[in-house]
Image (cartoon, rainbow, N blue to C red; front, side, top):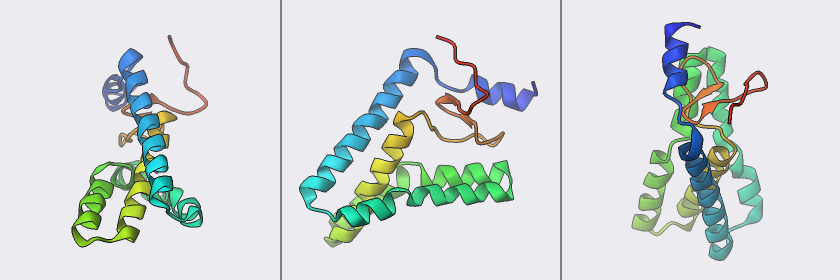
Length: 138
């Protein structure tokens, strides 16, 4: 195992804290989806935009470093929260709807264990390794 892989794998959360972070993601997904429903947003828009952040996978065509940067930019809370603030500031229901859908997407990804990516490869995340070759320990 190389030093970079060992370091980035060692930086992944595990145990009860990993479970807590995944439950936070589930809570974010459920909360944003419920808020969107209460808001009266269009489910067609929700369905179309829900997977939009995953277009960032295309960054991996340029390599794992660029892929991780692109993925993390689209799966961090910073941009959708800026949209929430902006949407409220300008009174834009569309901007708020986009922010809720984006946050719901991030939430379900976290709940499923898809964390922010390290530059060593797509399978190395802050929530632990993902992929079919991963051996899980209790």
